[in-house]
Structures are given as structure tokens and as C-alpha cells.
Image (tube, rainbow, N blue to C red):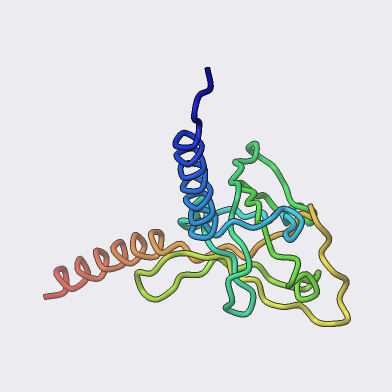
Length: 168
């Protein structure tokens, strides 16, 4: 007794092809990169100013990676210069820009527009400075604390209002 498997094979090939195409589209839309084409750099801050997992990393304004981990350091942790730090970001950066990221590069937390998304901006270093190797730990430039500025401004406004009221 022979059985005809033609229809079952066709359905199986169709299902497998659909799954493969769906996986390929998700890979492209998800902005995934192979591990061989990127490397990690650790950047330490006192205040990370709204950075989240997946925050873009840019060099000279061009997206070259993303934040893949945020680690809260132990209280009293210090950087290589002896200054206190509280947070370590893991930046996963494309190897295409490795020549631009050097010891004198600066790592800023920046904002696109007035209410735009946050991103980590890396300024290219000078050609004479040594390269930052993979897994290196560097100190970032802390962003301004707008919440503290507003709070201090409100306190100052209160004092000025009190002086005006008392001198009428």
C-alpha cells in the first residue's frame, strides 16, 4: 500500500519558506548586527540623563551602535582618576568606526531637539592619540541636570519675590 506525500511536502515547504521569510524580515527590521562586526566599550557616568537600553550611539552624528547594558555601580565606586561614578553603560559599537574612537574622544549624553530622544555622542579623537580597545572603561561627560537647574531657579524666584514684597 503506497501513500502519496505530494500535498504534505508542498504544505511543509510553504510553511518553512514563510517562517524563513518572516525571520529574515524581523532580522532586517530589528537592526541586528553580527557580533563579529561590533565591539563593546564601557562608559562611566555619575548621572546618565534618561539613557535606556537600546539608546543609539553616534560618532560625528552618524548612528554606529547602541547601549546594550546599564549597570549600577556600588556606592563609592571611582573611575581611574579617582572621581566617583555611579553608572556604567555598555556601548556596542560598529568596528567600522574603531579608528575614530581614541583615548582623547569624549562621550556625551545628548538629546535630539528640545524634546527628542537621548543618544550617546562620541567625538572623534585625534589621529595621534591611541585607540580605545574593546572592553575598555572610559569616563563620560555627565549631562547637565535640568531638574536641578529648574529647582534652583524656582528657589531663586521665590527669594526675589520675597525681596520685592518686603520692599514695597
